[in-house]
Length: 180
Image (cartoon, rainbow, N blue to C red; front, side, top):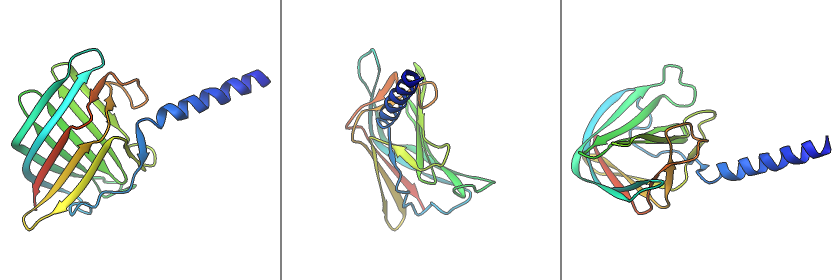
């Protein structure tokens, strides 16, 4: 019995250590659109995403004022937030979706290899993806969401506790310019 408790304790510690690698405590999203319940906003995105499969060469998707949308979908139950904010764009190589809800976020990318994701929008919705730094900047006509990948971010085709097999690489940056 004592051995079983020791083994369970070690496994729980390892699991907790592994989970710490991909999330950190959320601080909220100071967007001017945060309290909207429903809306569709247009804009553009610029920047680049460098990505690779676990076993493969790096590829780069460049965005130069590509069309972008901010779809604000209501949470009819308003459990933690009034709405989900989905930033969506694509180019010839990839489709991207970045979502925020309460204090949590999610990132999805679709390439010719499939759709890969990491979502922390579940449970208490209090954590964000570690390695994605974000800043909101308001101007007279628009809001900018500057996303910088300060570390490699692992994505998978399964749930968030699945071993990542796809990586957005450090240095990738996107700037969404969404019209007010």
